[in-house]
Length: 120
Image 1: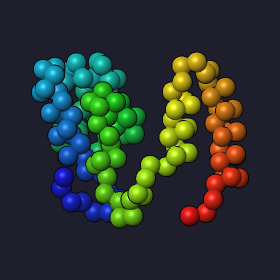
Image 2: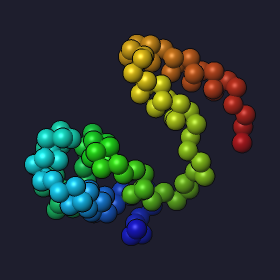
Image 3: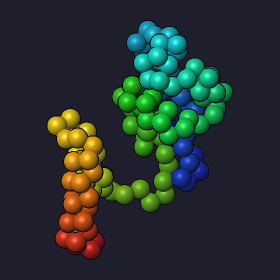
């Protein structure tokens, strides 16, 4: 990966990864737009080096199976993924929980986690 400024998103590298996925799958950019909900205008802007907005980044990352964090250079990158963030993602992705139940469970978990975690 290309070295970039601290706290910077390598949008050209991200676009290259998406473009490689398009090529490997043999689909058109119009099809990518249809499958992800990302407009063709946004895709064209990305091709010219513009950064995607957060929802486009998320949709394209999910579609291509790439981790957007791999395109960010952070000086003090944590050594491990944040457990609370992982638990929150799991709760919100559980299809057996409604939106209100997921939020309630998430709030309880955050409160308990903050109270019980030890300082490192």
